[in-house]
Length: 461
Image (cartoon, rainbow, N blue to C red):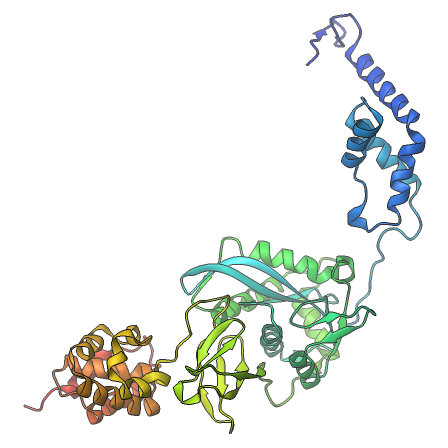
């Protein structure tokens, strides 16, 4: 740093007696002269950039680095930055910049964003789908576990049902779940999304994903909802619950005035609905059906995860209905075999439906100790099965299988636990009676307390 002293007039002088402002001015002129010596070379760099993509052009920093390395430049970076700024201003063409776009009522823009949230007690990355209406500035957002075709359709379905209408035009970029752009510039849509468009009757349009100004409304909306709805980190018991909270919040935010009109956004949006499409009488099922082949254990691989249909269906061709939150496996005749929860991401563990393995474990009771469903049983029931001999264990597992076919696995094993705790004999009749009573109480306010059924298990005095 150059040492300076203050004079009586308030000006600063360097140790040699020259004013500090004079020294800085002299340094700038020296940098300017050095730039002038390399003018021919330097002018060619930004000129050549005009033929390059925008993100592959010289910045002021890169121009300075090349001047130092290739031309022996000893001037300041600030002089180079001023020169680059002046060059760009002097060579700006009339087509530079952006044009303000006018969007017709009933047109929507769609894009994805990502944020961290706690879902069912686990912190994870949530993909949120944002739908923006540029005419009224209305914004909607839903939470999803991915960006696949079924996720896009499910997210739009939730928003359409909340609005009670469907837009006439929906603008996308090259979202993976919607389609991809061919080399000739046209867009190829996924099969499920094509069916979704036909069902609701809207026109899909595709924009360049690298030209954010072409869908600036939704680009701004993604940042708005992230800052206003996702700070601090949101928490919910499920994606559906988080979506309901966000949709309600979007409705509340829409009560504020439009940025350009002295009218609330929700009033403009209600008027915009006159230009939209009514929803069809039948609800669309956002399910991607695929043909899958099971392995020798009866498990089918879907998106790198394994879902068992059961040993009965080993080495067979089945139909898999891939939805956002579940996988439905159907047999060759169209009958539903099982509907396990869908796994997002890659899991080395097979997603097991316990009911699908009860039959084979009942037939081979000695594999119980190593069976993948052993930990799905309550501790009381698991301990009882562990103590049983093979024959008795086989009979109890067969009873559980029979009752689970009518009442479901969860209610059945809870019934077995209740019967054991009541000190009753565990047989098919007792399990079935208790399981049905548990189902009758399912869904009551406050959740289900299995202790309320203990009275049915007590011996009559």
